[in-house]
Image (cartoon, rainbow, N blue to C red; front, side, top):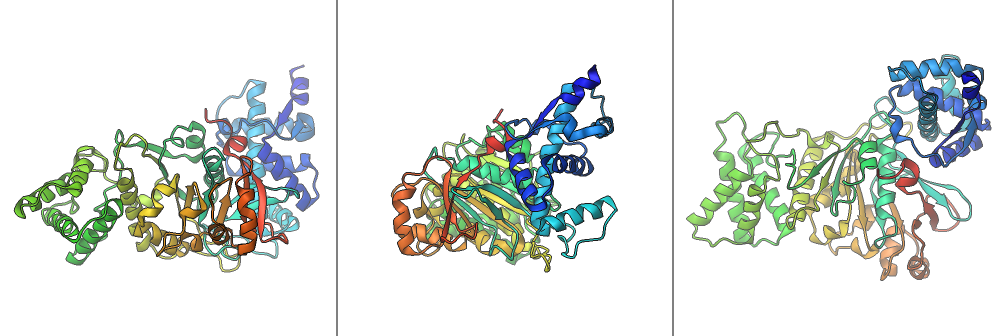
Length: 521
């Protein structure tokens, strides 16, 4: 009786998996049940120890268990038990494991389809992996380089999937993303969906992520933290594992350069005059000099605060805003110091973490700028990211995501600008979320010119020029779009033409994170 119950049990996929199966069916012509079996087998082969708790959404395609597993029910059950490395005695647990692998496998198959190009080549590729076919004529992605793809939604009117291929150099000039809209329109949910797509599917050459969380919303989203595998640092209560003073070498020239870079970061936070910049640079150089014969040649903010106090006293300078900022950075223990029980993260760019800045009453921007400066310094020292010249796929190493970016963009941080300008060849992407299209043209530096993927939700007071620059449409089209943008529903977006339609832009309904990956809890 129990076996019969097992045979008729229902399995329901996530909404995202259902969309993936529809696209796979259109490409291959295979029925849903066959595609679901392929997805199940692919997921079991690639990620046998899948975290099934990440796949709770059951709002998609429903399968009769027998139509899905057929006479192989016992075989798949045995494979699931072996994969989970524990006894799965309850029928509901078995069902949940099947459902999770089907959902995960659907995404794996869709990602592979985007890599090989056609349904025929996908089937040939699957045959090769099963040992029963020859390699498809179109070469796959080079080892160690994964295609980072996110289906962000569906075009309104046609239902055509709107896909961002962040590291396909044949289709995108750079991997950078901007999401723009007033509060409540879905910016953060869309950003989390894109990041989860890149971080959760265990792609070859998986990128890391540094997320600067201005309001604390992302840090509180337990589901996203689990899906992304990120560690949360809630400053000032958690000390960041970063020492901004780490260098590749400690020559006089490198130390002077480091001092100038710190002055740039501090000046982005609070405009420094030439005397303040000189005092800060001298204090930094003195702090390095004090450690030149020690095992650890780099100072920390406590040592810098002491040296800056000595410089001010020597020059009879009154304590000012720069002095107070350095003092607070030291006393709040925001960054790694020599009393920390563990060494600093080195390299930092390999970390996947969310920096919750919301508890800080001040210093949010300087903490962010020091993180960005550290990330840029490490990126600049790396060789260019590997690229498969045949497919155009370049390895995406790291994503810097900045929520509420309008708090940073007007401050003209040179290291953020350099990350965006130079990140393409190094495999670094910058994802920005802000409230207005007008945030991106900062006079001497126009971020819009270097952002390949731009999603604009409802926004007010947007200028036609800003809209035209962001989504790369004619000025007249932008003028017509401005009043439409003010009336978009939540999750309705306009973006640069990602569907190759006749229009110069794409209008679509975005998929929120909670719909694809479940609620925050």
